[in-house]
Structures are given as C-alpha cells and as structure tokens.
Amino acid sequence: MVGPPRLGLDADVVVVGAGIVGLATARALRRRAPELELLVLDKEPAAGRHQTGHNSGVLHSGIYYAPGSAKAQLCTAGKAALEAACAAWGVPVVRRGKVVVATEVGELGRLDELRRRAIANGVACYPLDRRGLAAVEPHVAGVAALAVPGTAVVDFGAVVEAMVGELAGDDVMVRTGVTVQALHPGDGHVEVRAAAAGGDTSVRARAVVTCGGLQSDRLLRAAGVPPPATIVPFRGEYVALARERAHLVRGLIYPVPDPRLPFLGVHATRDVHDHVHLGPNAVLASAREGYRWRDVDLDDLVDLARSPQLRGLARRWWRTGAGELGRSLSRRWFLASARHLLPELEAADLRRDGAGVRAQAVRPDGSMLDDFAIIDSPVGVHVLNAPSPAATASLAIGEVIARRTLERVRA
Image (cartoon, rainbow, N blue to C red; front, side, top):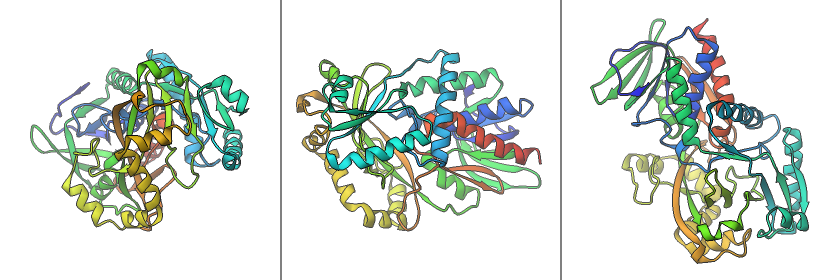
C-alpha cells in the first residue's frame, strides 16, 4: 500500500528510500524472510521520483565494468533477474542491441579493452568493421564498433509501479511523505526519527537500511557515521530527436568511453516507446534534486562550496567540465559532439528533453568512487554509492543488502 504515514508504527526492518534499489531490497527481504514486518519510507509523494524516474531506461549488459568488481558481477546478475521479473509482471522489455563505436583509429585500443572486459564478464558481443557497422546502424560514422546484442530498454517507471504493487500484495508497507531526520541506536533496536505531514514520528526497528540516492551521504551522517565520500550532483540533460528523424537510430549507439571517467559520453537511445534521446551530458547541478538550471538549493550550494571533494574534482577535471558545460549552454556545441556519431544530424532535428541528476560519490581528494559502495553502521546497512548501472542491477543489489541485513536481525 502506498499512502500517508501512520504514526508510531514499529517494524523489524525499515528501508529508507523508495527508489528502485530500496524497493528491490524490501522485495528481497520479504522473499527471504516472510515472517518479518517491513516498512519502506520515502520523503516524496510517490516512489521512484529521482534517479529511478529520470534515466535513459537502458538495461545495461555489463561490458564497461572491471572484471570482479561489484558493478560487473551485479549488473549481469541483476539484468537477468530484472528481465525475468518484468516478464512475470507484464512489463515490456525490448532488446534493442547496442553498438559502441570508435570514430577514429586512436580509439581502437580502448574498444579492444572493452571486448576483453565483456568476455571476462560473460557478456555476448562481437566486433564490427566499417561495413558491418553500416549494416547494423547505417547512419553512424565509425571505423569499427563492438556490437552488444543483449542490451535492452525498459520503462523504469513501470518497473517501480510493478514492484510497489507486488510489495503491497506481500503486506510490505510503502509510506510516502516521510522525511527521515535521524537514526539512533537503542537497546536492541534502532529509533528512526522522521517528519511527516501529520507531525513528527518515531519508528522503532530492529535494523535500518538506507538507500537514499542523492541524499545517501546525509543519511549516513544521520546515523552518526562520517561518510568516506560526499555526494556531488551531476545533471544529465537529454535532447530528443524529432520523430521524422528517428530512423537515424535503430537501437543504442555509444561512443567509446573515457576509462578514467564514470560517464559514458553523449549517446543515442531508442527507448521502449520508440522515442530517440541523445545525451546526457554531465554538468554540476546547483541542487541535489535540481533537474533544471533554475532549480537552486542554497543549502546544497553552501555544502558544495565548502566541500574539499568539489575542489579536488575541479582540479582534476576542469577541462572536461568546461566541455560538458559548453554542450549544455550551446545547442551548436552539443550538435557538433553528436555529429561525431551521427553526421547527418541537423540543428532542426533536436528538441529539448528532460534531465536526470546522478548522485556521484567523491572522496576528499577529488577522486570518484567508481564501484557500488555499501557500508555497515551500528544501526544497519547503508548504500552510499549506487550510480549507473544500479537500476539494471537493482534486484541483485537488493539481494546483497538483504543478506547483510538479515545477518543482523537474526544474530
């Protein structure tokens, strides 16, 4: 059930955050321990309002991630699990296939490295020469490419609706409009203090899981634990391709990524509804939940200005940041970048589209956490860093968190 909070409710486990990772964790807990009373809390009026509801809809295959990393293991396992769950829920999944394109000879070495990673991660792929690429994506310019036929797309909003419905059927309560402010360990329990429309509330639980996305480091502080990294929000802005030009993109088209960065560069995606999106770029957001340039949160800005993480990040990547900012401010600059892959694009083909905000965890020296980060504390288990491909990997991430949580509850 989804609705307003009920004051004074106690539970065995409280999950803070009703994005896809929080919901997947509640689902895994219910399947593993049906006897437990579970409660999911979220500050928004509905589930999946932030990163889950503002992404490209891609079910990633797992070719980019270092073999043996959490991302590599959980992406491939999570994709298979989510595809099976979507089939059971009746949520459409469309296998579009993806090509990762080298637009110049200097990128061929990085393309070969991606193929080695794909093989190590058990992801089916095959190389394409110029002629093979033209057969798959005839409007793409490139000297070579890597084809990944298993890459798919889904509507993650529909996935969230299905998960919430399943949880309701399993007597898991999802309470919205509840902002968690503090997590205090007690004698054999955790006290969750929160604010809600009906007044402040306090919930006693045996353990807490936080899956706060853009607020993940703050929830760790609310538990009394200094986070080893701080969330820096990056807004990813999309551009839509005009319907009459959608034929330029058959599936998913990606550039060869820079291995030093967690961002994949401007790419083209035909979504589950047959709309084609270009992007995203990655610009620093002036609010953690700022999806537009005019969205400004003074508290967030002050935190960023005082942050050694941001200063370190700027020292390392100011040139890259300037380029991303240029593509955000200038449609001509964005078009020039997109034309590296799709040279037939014209300015008249592009339409303004939506945006998402990526919660990127950054260490004090300015280096970015590249892998998923899940941290234990005296009150429970906390997801500190879960950027892409977390939506794809969500069911597998939920299983990991559920196991760690149940070890506490059953100790």
